[in-house]
Length: 117
Image (tube, rainbow, N blue to C red; front, side, top):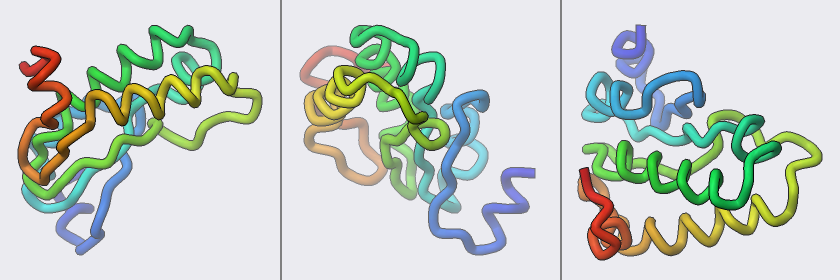
């Protein structure tokens, strides 16, 4: 139903972490900007710093070249009790690998780190 909902005129769609971000980009990325997908519980709350960084990289690789844009975000809200270190790791990875972001293009930070698809 993604395409039908996107055609209702929403400006951005937050993709929950259980959905495939790349599939969403293919289905609705030309209609609406997409966001999200870092697992809030498994990665943000209970994962390691490396888990957070890896998940941010994966989301940016899958979503940053979406035709209508992509915003890095967790798959839902960040749970209470999420370690500060994991939030800082999310910010660090977003800045490093999301650097040079432009709508419809892979982030420059990913390209420079040789992390493109």
